Image (cartoon, rainbow, N blue to C red; front, side):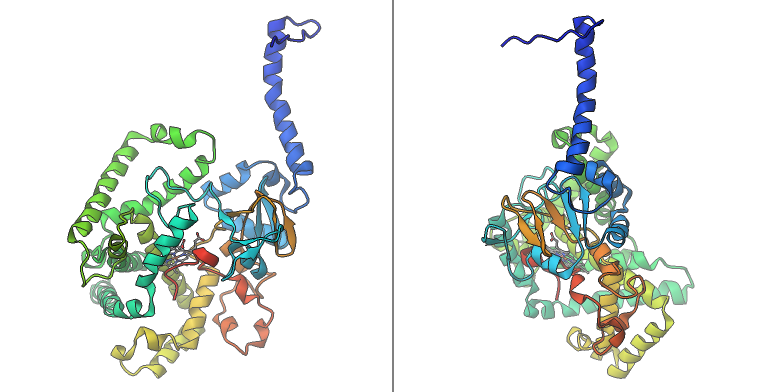
Length: 451
Ligand code: HEM
């Protein structure tokens, strides 16, 4: 087929071609802005116009670490559903949470079939790793199989068996705080000490062996690398949305980062191999052991991060709020001291009956959720109903935790830490939509570590 270039008056064919090349992207850009604002099936949904035009604004917020605060402002300004990119909606209600993640049941699609929504393939991916991992895999069979295997470790019986190990670590934490802070009168960074504790405990749960951060009073280098690399994972998840970036990424990393990454991977492999060499042992009921029993060896970093960083964030948040709310602190101390006469009588089972402790934990999860994001899902071709809205197919949808928890449409005095709101009989908070807060997710991906 032969092409002819229309020669514009006063311009040579070459100049006409150059002009065409320069104008095409501008026309395409204008078309996509007009399409996203007025013609897209999501055009009717409220939200900031700039964010609806291009993914750039959302990605910029992610890289700056502030999307959770932006989303809260959007809910307050636009209401319970907001369009945050050309193809993505966020919701705030309890019903939306059930519709997106499935609650305990799969939700119903527009075409009448029942199924869970698929994970967002742009966010959940293996970042170049070969094996499928239950936390990131898009294969529902792989996920279901691995989840079934690991679930054994989270049974009531297994958790009770871990109690002496948990108490041992907490005793070490208290002894260290007393040593450094009381005896030696030093300032201590309590966030770091809580990190040491949750990483040691999670190391034990996953590998059957502590990282000994509490003993050494410093983050194990392997753990330290993991916590700092979380930022890189955020950058990767944003840049991987650009075509070709997954292939280009290794060439764009600075040499020292690649070297650190390789060293870390070698350490990870070494640790996993040590554990694998021990094989299945009867003494160890750790997660690697359970996977091993079923012939699976996989990257354990995600399990460590899933269990430790989340728990450390919650405990740090709860401590912060207790130390800045004297009356709540006094009420909790009173509840503990009137229930238990000795430290030894405090067990996980007995502590689970303390209503004010429960309220403090719930309120801290609400105000300071360890996972702030929306864990987005993709709607099926036929579309779905979410919170009463007809959402077209291939739309990314989610309920962002931090913004839903602090949205005034869900909770009264939403930005104040008030544990009493979780205690039955409190008239003032009757109107709170408690189920809008789902810090552990829902449906088939609901957190395995929650009890
Ligand atoms: C306060 C503490 C915790 C919070 C707030 C939390 C939150 C969450 C959330 C929101 C999800 C769902 C993610 C999604 O939909 O993709 C999740 C999944 C998961 N969590 Fe937790 N988590 C916590 C502690 C733990 C602990 C202690 C463990 C175990 C050591 C754990 C292991 C997991 C695993 C394995 C999954 C993946 C489940 C699946 O995809 O089927 N988490 N967690």
